[in-house]
Length: 52
Image 1 (cartoon, rainbow, N blue to C red):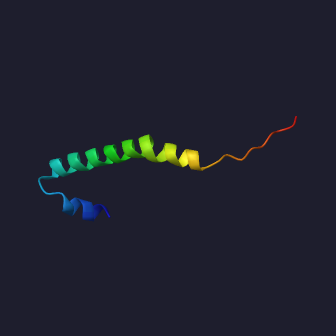
Image 2: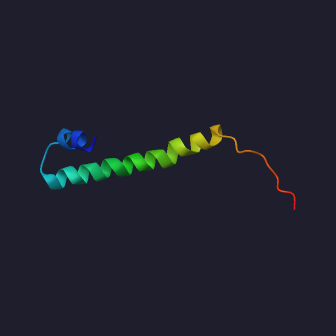
């Protein structure tokens, strides 16, 4: 998978690394901002109580 991404982006090595880091940062931001909160609303926690 990484080799496919590596061959997809043109340019010198330093530019490929910079672009891949930027893509990873945007992907992480999108997951944290949109996907995880949406998944948290869809997953209901088990309602349980602990009796002492």
